[in-house]
Length: 334
Ligand SMILES: Nc1nc2c(c(=O)[nH]1)N[C@H]1C(S)=C(S)[C@@H](COP(=O)(O)O)O[C@H]1N2
Ligand SMILES: [Mo]
Image 1 (spheres, rainbow, N blue to C red):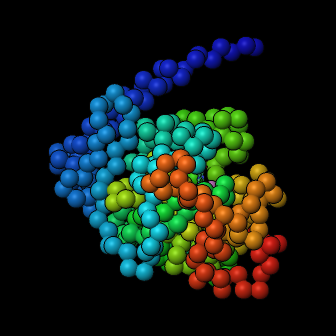
Image 2 (image 1 turned 180 degrees about the vertical axis):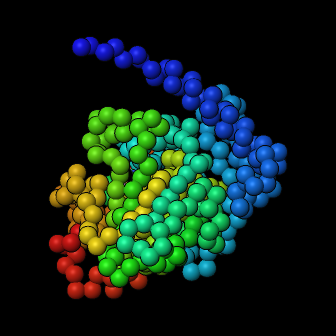
């Protein structure tokens, strides 16, 4: 039987726009104190609104966060301008082009949200949207982000160490790996609706770390950047940041963190195991089969033709993680 599926895109689009206008208005009312203090984020400041213009334009609203300034996690590298960090993205759930995520994600709903930490833990935890900002102290950390495609940025993230959250759940001694899962919601994520537009990925996007990597103090759960909550294209409301590994390990919009005794099958590794290893440590000595990893293009305030080719550093410059891999052949376990 032939079932006629209505061309629903146009209809959906307008519904989504209306939703978004509604959401934006809610955020403004919230920030002005009209919607009751309990509905507010734990720590937005008084002028907590980031308003991008008319309601015709679909724009996600971010809010200011209170956080401590970086002490140990600083960098002398020039920060990548915010405009570039939030408009040049990889987030295949919203399309495979670099400008697809910002274009396709502005109606993404982050509130309510639910993040569950379970598996081999003594005390499973579920955090709602508000909890993401108030369960742990927020701090700023300036990290280099090195994509496996050989470009990089310098990002002032806001968040808390993954270890501090995992400790609350009390991992059992049998736990050896930590598995992360992105939201699966094809209604909101066009890339999940068909295999072609989603880059051939079998969703949900899954990533994983060895438990000792997950517990390393550098491993961050980020809820913001440049002083505000994350925009959807960067993984709102909460994403992982593992600065010594290629960017694809830094999974976005996480709904589940599960501790396990087994190494998980991760998204990019399953797609092409010869190109994307489970470890994916930044390593200038191990080339991608199709391009060199010895250097990278740093995205800076300069234009398209700025001279910004730099040498790639082992572990992306975070040499303090080397002991995690003592005795391992990093050419084999790439
Ligand atoms: N769920 C999900 N997480 C993801 C991706 C993705 O496609 N889906 N892309 C990864 C890749 S390849 C990179 S380089 C970083 C990019 O993060 P950014 O867009 O915030 O710079 O996100 C990573 N996390
Ligand atoms: Mo990437």
